[in-house]
Length: 143
Image (cartoon, rainbow, N blue to C red; front, top):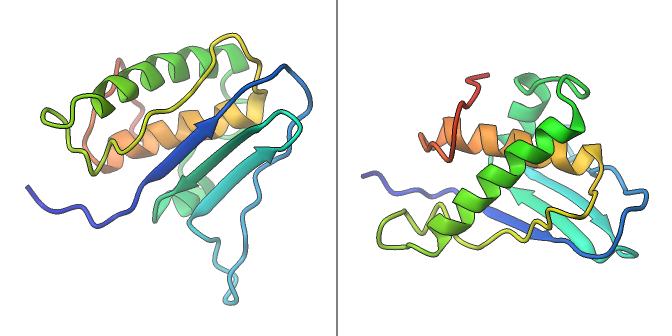
């Protein structure tokens, strides 16, 4: 099995209640390329989503479904399934590659995180499953 050099860090700290959320900031490098870090944060709600994975930003811009293609409830349902399976795999490092599944994701099923947060998490899971040949649960689009 080939060694995965890619550093994956997907941290999701969620808590509190529903309110407006900031949109992701994609920092531009000096040569106008989008960085490999996508961050959504709201200090008032005490949550942060950080996705660091080489190639995800360009994949998101070029291959992801457009915003509002899926409803928020669809994205939430898929995210719940995929987060549950992700967390199961984190807890089984001898069965699943610990370089892929480094840390658990805290995703509160009651909290309304809004469309943008769910959209980015959903698309990251599609990117992750297609890029690393993983299948977390159910149908995965090959976009």
